[in-house]
Structure formats: C-alpha cells, structure tokens
Image 1 (cartoon, rainbow, N blue to C red):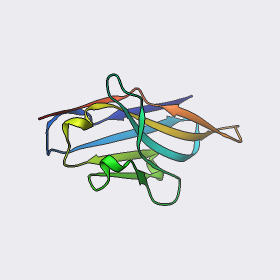
Image 2 (image 1 turned 45 degrees about the vertical axis):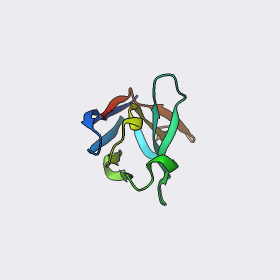
Image 3 (image 1 turned 60 degrees about the vertical axis):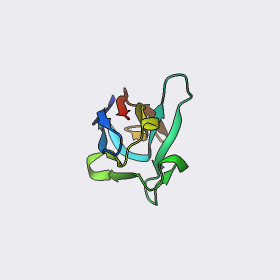
Image 4 (image 1 turned 120 degrees about the horizontal axis):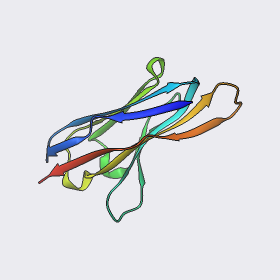
Length: 121
C-alpha cells in the first residue's frame, strides 16, 4: 500500500506565494518521475511541472520564472514553490508520482487527493 498526501494549498492574494508539498509513504522502493498537475473548473488537467529522478525540472510556459519544483528523494517528497501567483493559477493541484513498489519490476502511477489553490485579484 502506498499513500500520497498533498498539503500547502490555500487562499492568497495576487502576487503572493504558496509552497505545496507531496509526501509518499508505504511500500516504496524508490520514486521515478514526480510531477504537479492542476485542473481549473471547466478545463482539462494540465502538467505544471515535472522532474525525473535525476535531471532538471520542466515547466509549462505560463509558470516559468515563478514556480520552482524540487524533490527530496530521501523523504519521498516533492515540492512546488509558487511565487508571484496570479488569479489564473487558481485550480486544484495534484501530485503525480511514478513509484517502484516492493515486488514490482515496473513503476505504478499514483495521484494525490489534490490541494486547492485560490488566488484573488
């Protein structure tokens, strides 16, 4: 069993900052790719930022220069630092992890329950 829990969402004024965290626990051997997605009402879910186990993160153009993704492999945790937030960043944010679980040679895709980010103008 694996649990994925996000935290850090909330209500913030435009120009403000939030830091999202996503922690995985359970029968984990290691975590491959990690990513943050978001979905606004009436819109499709989109990839905001992602990172492989090694290498540099990638970002959707709309958040480049404002958001920073980082990971702590020892803690099975991924973070999303969001600065200079805009009303268009308002969405439910979801963590997505590709996890090697015990006794499996391939990764399994896990999603968190989501954390709401609301940016007021």
